Length: 463
Image (cartoon, rainbow, N blue to C red):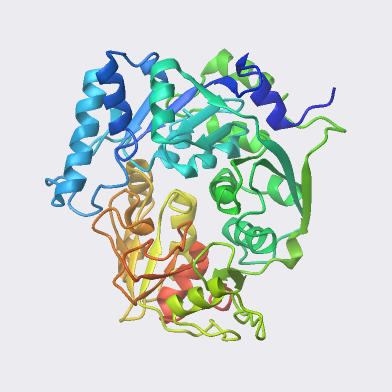
């Protein structure tokens, strides 16, 4: 029977079927951080249970950490407590921790792939919704709740109902200046933030195949924003080349054996999906959001939709929060902050794109522009390539690794009423700070906005 990529990986990890209930699914890799793990460890401690397979659990500190002066004690008491608790728990239960000061520290969904821990055909979970990022490698990766974190720590398995399958196919050549962030924002704007509910999505088509691994990770990262359980992309030569030589990747003959195995991780001809969509890459322009969920996106030169008297209360509430009007153009609108970072767009490719655009230019004086690398390795590579000098000369602040202004759990907050063009993944009310107004966009659009001081089409600045 023809199988989808999702079916192949899922079915090979089912260890037990509960009659009239969920399946017991084995988990290959478990990522944890300081926010969703404390209660799980407390649960183990109260029952006298060890971590079943500690070598398959990897921890890092990312959500609460400051992105300046990381060598100093954390100032915020709650953040310090959470990071200290993670250190204590990992030490007690024998879990590897890449904490502050470690050369591998960074955002959990950045360090897994760059260290070669994330590999095709795996099942991977984390107490974080954007675990879907790792699906770019042909893995099944999804976010879980705190009680499920405890479940995986205790058993290396999880109880899950098998999701339905969805195919999203994109074919054609992208226009200059259109990035993977624009692809995924475009898709979500078309199928809505609930369009993928109950499904696991496979992204395919020649547009996807032409993307780098970093770009594929951006797309799978935001599959959760369409309501999907996760997203995945079949591994290919681009995937194998990215993995080869990384710290924890297979080496030598073992690598060659694994590549041969990974080559079977693709959807069979004739396999059926529960739902399918198809898009033309030529229809996609640089995107930006205008509202308070990722599905409220438009082409950067388009107008905010005008429902002409048929606006829902949620639509009105969203525009009121954002201080915008139906029918208004966003291009040219003055903004206050630009944030380039998060598990969506903080990899070395993102920093290179920004540096290339801003080289020899200066940001607008009124703009606060933060660039936060996704890991210590990204930070060190940016310095080695001289990107830090280019960014500094352009007036951008290159900070230290962390989730930063993606969410208001640390010191990097956007003030109430201020507008921020952000490369992160969510633009909910208060996501970047109480009253902050977030507009999601690609690294190129964010960089161009910082240079001009207003929402800009990066193509006007590109060589």
